[in-house]
Length: 264
Picture 1 (tube, rainbow, N blue to C red):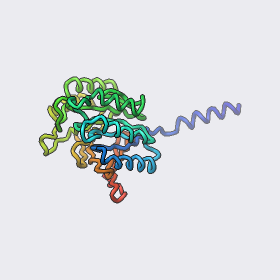
Picture 2 (picture 1 turned 120 degrees about the vertical axis):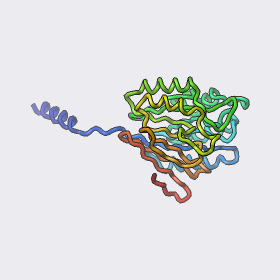
Picture 3 (picture 1 turned 120 degrees about the horizontal axis):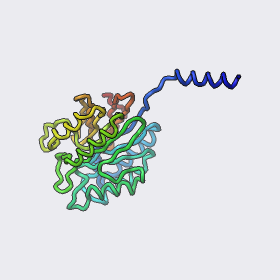
Picture 4 (picture 1 turned 30 degrees about the horizontal axis):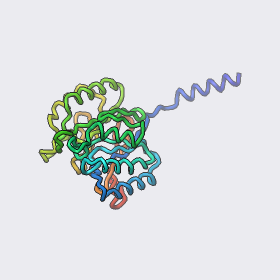
């Protein structure tokens, strides 16, 4: 009888315990532009993050990780970030790839997986999950004729459409180098942006698009999607702390100059 009473109380308490959405917290770093000469700044960043944080789910690098598409620079970049105590996810930017330099989409991502581990995809576009949130990465880099204009080709947009359909019951965050938001710098804008927007309009599960590329900080809420554009790394001065809870996106631009976060 006593065991039955305990069991009943356990069931009742469990029934009335509120259920909270899983919290996801991560760091975004963008436009590091690493070279052999400035690599110490990234090493300092790794040390800072490992020291300051214990509750981060992952760190994501959203492109232009190296300044020029050289394999030795990519190897150095990966060798440094693998010392982070958190998982790292890597996207390419327009400075990262060039077919004539023998650094293609495929080779770049295979090197990333080889160095960081099997948890990381070797594909240019990939999906990973944290808690209740699905993260979709988009490439958009032109490797044959590199340039600052992002271009999400038809096959990439078809893939995005399929992924958004597959995870229609989940909240989705898209990670990419090139913002969807317009820029006054014409040659940095997104080529055929309308095609990308048409895909987004078909779905209602994208809560945020997080990017870099513009080298300045900008955040806007458009068509029920929160667009986050983060300032460039600038020798370990800037990165963004992002938290997602109950479908809401909270960000802080960390400025290491005075060691105080700028609340957005």
